[in-house]
Picture (cartoon, rainbow, N blue to C red):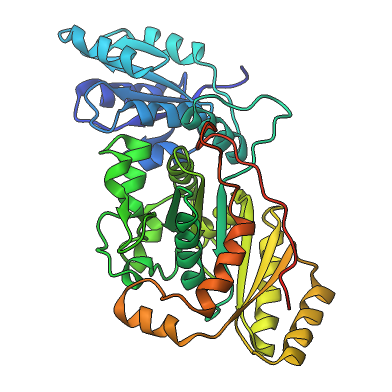
Length: 412
């Protein structure tokens, strides 16, 4: 290895932490890139080895697996007067353990032996997906993503469509989950009259840090049979969640389901605001990881123009097939043809669908319930039949691999 090992040091009031930090600062031997105060920092920063006490409350097996998935190592430090601390660290899967009163030379030897390996976020996420699903895909393997991302420009009705897609899939005896990953205006909880707790943040805590069970973050939509992970509790909470953590939650939710419908925001700009943070990073990450993208816009000239702009931005993030839904479209056949010609001239979609205006949608929104049967539900059911993975056979495995259905062009 060239140069000094780069490490992150978890802060704790134990004496060895200050002694080690001071020694490395004054004498070298390893470079402290970050003093970690909270678990998310340990996943954000670039370093080779994380040095952590066996007493750190956030040190759990899911956290250790998340660090390993980023090709980083952990050096666990235990008090020699507490031999159970050593066993605890080994049980969690840290790479090496050392006594807190060991000579500095032994600390440096341990850090050198844990050769750091750098890895980009995409590789880290694929590795973590393998941990969640039980086995990582081999080289050249292609696993179809069960994620169906639904988004579009403001005012297009993407959230309403995402909810109805989840409901249509569940009525067709698929195991569906709906996740609100809108990092600008999360609204699924309000739309379905659900509480804001639990939510996406509690799901992240469960998956990444072992704080509770993931099932505790899932609620069932009223009068429906699909599970919901509600969105962030407030607009400012986006800064408390990393995009990679949301992808990890989606992987975990998909493990026991046929599909996960994800409501994303209308913003796709790459606006970095700090280490591991991007203002619209959650939506960008979900769109990039999706197996199918459903782009929703309103059926007006302005709405179509905005929709095509959103699709152009989304296509720069991933290669998922794009199903275009023109929502609240005019009933007039000539205008539908004009819309279809404009969309297909600019961007040939995997399929083009028209969803008519329906007063039942407004009624349901005021009641906080699902939309009553009518033109809207029938149109979305046709979309769901093509964008959601095929229902597995009775003996088929769930939550492992998904085969995308062959798409068709919707009737105009």
